[in-house]
Image (cartoon, rainbow, N blue to C red; front, top):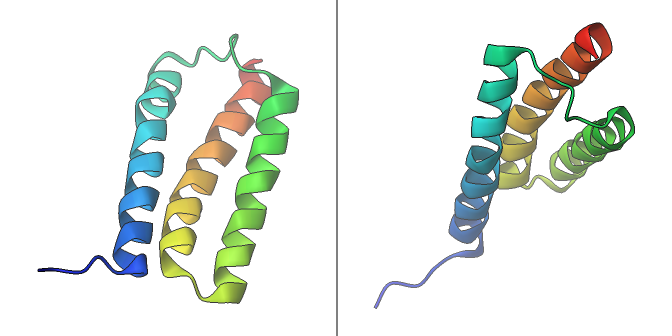
Length: 86
């Protein structure tokens, strides 16, 4: 019977949460419509993701690093669009 490792569970969770963010990010990139995005919420979210990335780096938790590096890149682009087109 196969045993699920904590790292495998971490990679699955990181993949699902990062992938769930993709459709909204793609829609925002495609339409440049940021009217429904709260600047305050997105700013706090982006800082939170950056802190999760730092935490993952400090802990050597590569599933957290991978997921949050991708999410941070997307969040920064969307935040930049909100500041530019908002």
